[in-house]
Length: 186
Image (cartoon, rainbow, N blue to C red; front, top):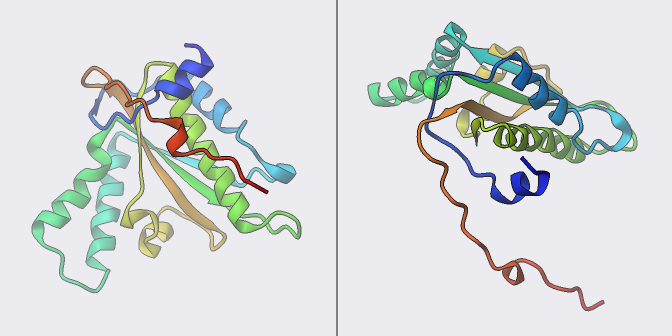
């Protein structure tokens, strides 16, 4: 697929099934991620892959986090937390791993990790792999961060769900560029 076609026509694919991306496809996904903009070449990211039974364990971690939140979650909420990682055969947890730097602010490093996540989405689309980026409460939950083994200088920026699209991809809407772009008058 042409690079511009991938950039212009990528869409989120929330309905995913087996098979997960194979080893060669994954290599392309992560090679693309490692080319994200990275001022200072700090490489402020790392990735966890979650598949097979590990998805069930992550669902259990999500449910535990919900229970530990101080409120009494409903059975429905707990079931939803358990099921979240089962939405796709492969999840990639994208983690911003902030490096101490007098020159590169934390926000810029988080943005770089987010760009790495976006690069994975684009590389997935270019290979015909369905993908969707999700975050939600489990991306900022301390119990989940601890369970995933994050350090104090790390944070989840994305849960990327990857697999085979269950349906035809939707056509993205054509947006009016003028609604978003204007010249600064100086």
